[in-house]
Length: 222
Length: 228
Image (cartoon, rainbow over all chains, first blue to last red; front, side):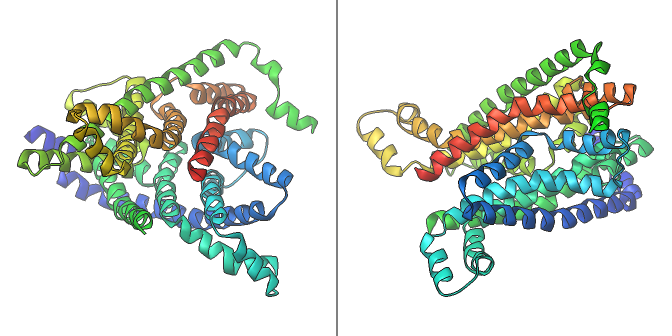
């Protein structure tokens, strides 16, 4: 028992590497805070366009979305990181990581928003349009707010997925939380930093996930 | 355009590598199937235990707490963190697992947590009257569960489970971090050996070919749920 504690829950080791872990967490949060609004904005735009458009354009958007849902995000990341430079296309590290995360998550958000917008009654669009609002205004002020509210639990859930997904950028040696914890483990010859990192992910994601399920239950019982 | 072909579609450069790529593709499929076989049945059993544990008994309340914590914890921690902990931390406790086993268990555990929630949500969504009808027509608890409740719950679980299964299969690429010779790690090492990205391009295309039909299946199932 003591051995387990000193190996996996060694407070002394974790305290020693805490600054390193916090710097890693800073990068993780920065990546989340940059990618989340970009993904949501891109997805909302795509969902609005496909809500209104003719069939061909809708199909094209659906195909793009499906492509990015089919390709594993780590493959996309490695491609941007190691394949493009070989073809003399250089993208800064942070941008490559952000692009991979945004393309992947925007595709999921698009699907979520699409079903949210579809649940807004057609009369809402007709009323807004016939009272003189432009298409942009109709979508931005009338349809999108109701549509997003319809799917808020799923959208929050996907935001949590994005936060968790930032861990994959450790695979290209960016020092976010997971990478920092692995480095700390190597320095201390002790895996406690990894356990600490897992707990940090959990403590940040858990309240948001609870919020998402609470909103979902409320939506069902309403 | 010609340059693009030289960089990304230089298939001649792969002449000696097709066998390795095919084997890696097989590994990816194998690891995905093993992960699904671990995660989904485990999630199902956990949901049944949670259902059985809905009583006031102290011990069962503890079981329920542990189950809910398990499901919440593994839904909140990134899959890659779980894999890395299994592969790099467990050896300190004398438990060394192979890369493939670490990946299957890591992704499988996370899948089981999501599957448990899916099954659980479906079971409690079956109207109470179904339980009462089953019991009052003379079926026992177990018979009611398996003949009346679970078939209805299964129907509601199909779409979200397919979604989660797809996510888990895609997550097997994370095994490349602990050196599973899967499609991603093999094609990306051929790419760096040849200093030409054709291999990884082929890898990416194969991933899309493998997963696109599943994405479409998810879409069809979701539509059906929405209109139901």
